[in-house]
Image (tube, rainbow, N blue to C red; front, side, top):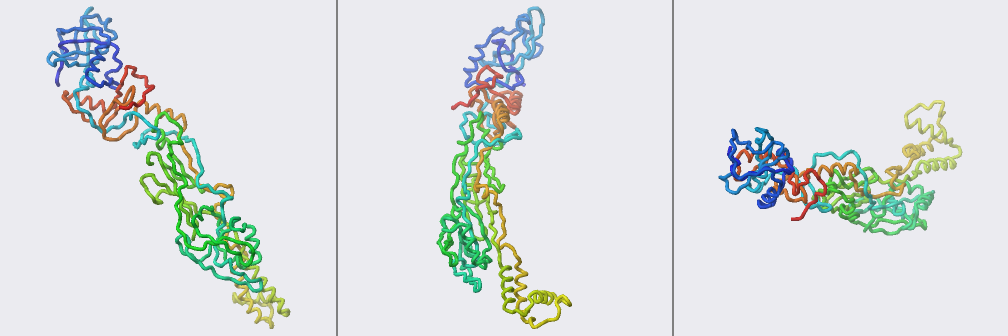
Length: 543
C-alpha cells in the first residue's frame, strides 16, 4: 500500500460538513475550485515542517493542547515528494499525549484526494438524479417502492358517446318486410334477398327502425299486429348506436303494404375506422413535485366500457404522452364495436390492445305462430259441425304417441279423417308454443341509463403517498438501471449516485481504487454547497 505522509504543509481544519461514512461529499468542477474551497476554511493549526515522531502513518503530533483542537474535523497536507498535490483526510480521533501535545489520528478522504486523478466513470447506474425535468418526461425504469392502496380520479372524459336519442333498432329478418304481406286468410311471405354487409355475407335482410327513417319502434310493432306471420321471420331486434352505420348505404322502404317507412341496408360497405380520442394525456394530469409521479404505477389512464372491460394505459409506453383511440364497427352477423389504441407500445394499427362491445340490448318480438294454428283449428271445426274438436285433438295425441285412448277418446267416428288432417297443425302448434321470436337479452343498462360509450379516466395515487414518494426521490433520485457516465453535476444543490459493480480507473493506489468503487456501489450524495442535510430546493439545471 502506497504511503503519502504529511511531510510538508499541514493544515488542521474545522467546518467540513461530511464524514468518513461517505454518505456525502462535496463536488468540484476543477482542481482550482477544490483547492480554493479548502483554503477558505477555518484553520486551527498549520505548519510547513512536520518533524513529529510517529510509530505508524495514521497520526501526527501537534504542539497544541487537546482542548484547542476539540472541533478539528479535517486535515489537508502535502507530501514533499509529491510536489504541490494536496491530500485530504478525515480526523478520526484526538489523543492527549501531554499538556501541550495532541496526537491527531486521520484517514485519507479518497473521494476528495483522488477526485481529479481518475478517468470519467462509466458504470451501470442503479439510482441517480436526472437533472432538469419537463412535464411528461418519460421515465422507463421501474422503482422498488410501493404506491399505497388508494388511487384517485383527477379527471374523466366520455368519448364515443351515444344515448337513446342517437340509437336505432337493427332488425334482422329472414323475410322481406317491404313486400306485401297478404291477409290473415291468405298470408304472403317473401324470403329475404340477403347480401353482403360490412364484408360479411348474409342470408337475411337488415332493417332500421327510428324516427330518422320515418318509423318509431311503437309504430313498427303496432303495424306488425296486422301481419303477425311476418314477425316470425324477425330473428333479431338489436339496439345499436347510430354511429355504427357510418358510410353504410341505407334506402327507405315501405313496411309491408303500410304507409310507414323503415331503413333498409341495401348494399355492401366496409367497416370504418374513426378516431374518437387523440391527445397528449400529460396535459390533463395535475402538476406534481416529481415528474416520475406521472408514470405507472403512480399514474395511469384507464379506458373502460360500461360492460366492465378496462384497459390500462401506462404513460411511459406512450409516444411522449400522445395516444389515440380508434373505433371500428361491424353490424352483420353479430354487431360489435371495437375500441383500439394506436401510438402505444409500438403497436401500430392493429387490434392487439383493444376493448369490444358485443352485448347489445335485444328487443323481444312476439312469435304468434301458436295463435295462428289454434285459429285455423277453430275455423276448421266451424266448417265441420259434426266433428268434436276436443275428441279429435285427443285422438290425434293418442295416435301420435301410440297410446290406447280407451274410454277417454271413445270410438272413432266419421271425423277421423278430419282429425288426421289437423294432426299436422297440432304438431306445428306443439313445436312452436307461445314464445318470443327473438328473446330479450344483452346488457341494456348502458342504453337505459343513457350512457353508451367509452370512458377515459386519469388516475393517480393519493396526495399523501405522492409526498412520501416525492421525498424519497428528492434524497435518492430515480431508478436508472442503465450504463451511463457518472455525472454528479445535474442538480442545483446535490446529486445522488449509486452504481453496481463500478470500476474506477486512474493513477490511484489500488486500495483506494477499491474503496472508491465500494463507495459508488453503496451510493453517495455529491453536494454543491455546504448545507448538507438540507434537502430542499434541489432542482435540475441545464448544462
